[in-house]
Length: 631
Image (cartoon, rainbow, N blue to C red):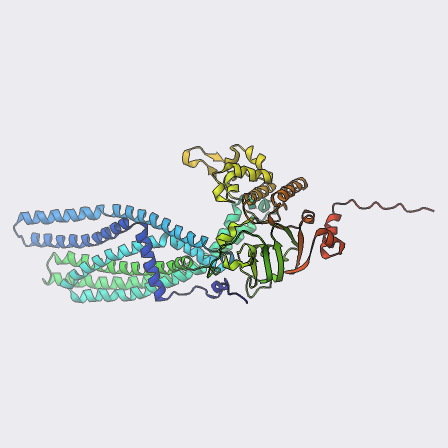
């Protein structure tokens, strides 16, 4: 029976479009919860001070009106005037001082939210069981937007909310003041904000669409930029003279990105210019009216500055509210990408009834396993059936593209078979939690990692529980033949294996790191695999590809010692290394073409035999030509 799998093509078909209103509400709730969880006291203080900063200008305007009216009317009561003046001075003082603590609290809240958001995002990414999403460009585009949104959007949403509170307070207070002076002008100014709001909402959607459009350009530009500054790529770039080529590619991606952003900026400039003209026309009409009304005696002298302040504050406040609403809308659109990644769910189906993987006693069985990376791609494995018996060494050989590394990915459950099943002592791998399965597997991959960490850490990553146990790390290094190299570094195993970073900045003992050769890095990767000496299955994918003949022989002797009695899967093109394997499996075009021991396959004149003879012939001296007989 074919079991269901979660496929990554869903990301490719469901290109993110305009989110529904429900998605925006969920984004708003999620961002608010994130901010509240990050620092409730700081969040409360920001919102309270924002509300206060909105109320103070209203109080200052009314105090100014009362002072001017009393002076013009020659009213006695100096104490009242002094009290009003002191109140006005106090309000002005607080208005002048308040932005500074508010700015500090915004910055502190932003730092706390960004830390919480980053932790939540990468926890979700680490929970992906397999590799498929990391190979999907559309998901990577969305992940980049999620990283950007998670870093700043929640804090910007909080800032937008604080500004909205402040704006509502300012507009409400001054609009009430404007109504007492001229209800007609209050209505005109309010209606003038409607086209501004509609236009800004349209612009915010366009901004979000532009951000999604330019995300692939930005990622490719970042790729070329990193290549041009990468130590790993520097040799080939200079030897082949491809620096200008890569720089042109980088510039092309930047040009595409700039073109899309420029188009957006033009729309924004045109819309806001027209809206600015509308607002200026309403303000100009209001100023003409207030001058005429004051000249006719319908308004007091105090009403004039009050009207001017109220008109400017209401127009500015409404414009600010529109900006805050549309900015919040834009940030919510971006935050939907963050939530989509955080809430995306498993990439591989979780076991309905998880089974704890027992220690391997019988073996691993591949039963009619078919696999392809997507429905529109060719089959990589085509009905593979074989058994890796407990305690035996199975060698997997074949041409490039035969499916060897893909089979390893399935054994580690980075993917699930498209058809068929893989069983661990009779238990389907899909019924075993991936973390439990992987605790029982040690592996070194063909594309092993270089970590910019110390020598001890580079090995200890193979089993984090061993990091405090230097003896186990050193034993693994000895087995891989890298112990003496690490011991003789300037700081021994604690030497940083990188020239990209330095160590010791935190305690003013700055040390420049060192790099290893390709073969030494390969030994380090083997040590990382050997550290997992309590695992049931050891996978070695091209473990000696970058080693010289003596080192290769040394490593294979060490591997024979290490894998004794342990179930081992060895993948290599060096056929001399698989002669003592208990079983050799030859893959051709994703199928099992031949199986047997080395001697049996040679005797049967198989494809393996022909590969072995062809490879061995390169190490033999050609037979000398016989001298021609002369007459």
